[in-house]
Image (cartoon, rainbow, N blue to C red):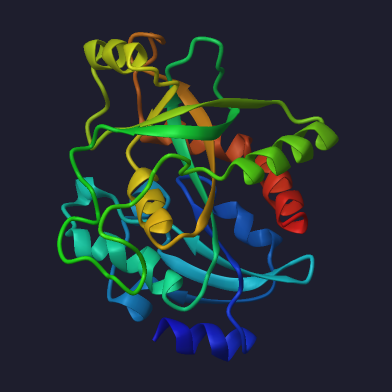
Length: 264
């Protein structure tokens, strides 16, 4: 059904898809000539709208370039199966999408970061205890054992750095730690994650990147630092604050993604 919906809109398959994390949904306003369809109609999947995930596929254009934008995602803490996690990414890989920009809202563990900063993900540490490729391998998409030596495309990171320099936008660069959730991390956990080399922590992204790399898709990862993590900040963590900070960083994030898309 995904192929039919996409071809009805464009008559061809766009090269790039974007996944919008919590509070980043306003990016869809940058699309022109767009159409949308809910995940319920497309995949028979619902998303939790209370956390800022509308659960829609938007199909439109940025500077005359066709783009697929996923407004919202599924998380393992929702109790989903690996097959449901695979569905969102592999459905697009199977029809020929080649690039993925994945975004998220996350907590900063690096003390040089500040809420509202944008971090380019250079690598990740998967501490969720889950991997979406567990089970029967889809040999048509990729190998049983997937190389993860460069999950976040180096050339894409160079392009986004050049864009940021041109637009005078400061970027952080760091390692993203994936945590299962839905509870926030303890102070002891944050200390441990920092000792492992983590700079930011969140509850998404890594499963999608694993699936994209399995299908040989090129990936750019961008995180909005919405708060400082437990033990670094004395502030009580809440998802409302995550959404508020994400929205404040939206202008920078939109500029980066729009200009990036023009350069690939």
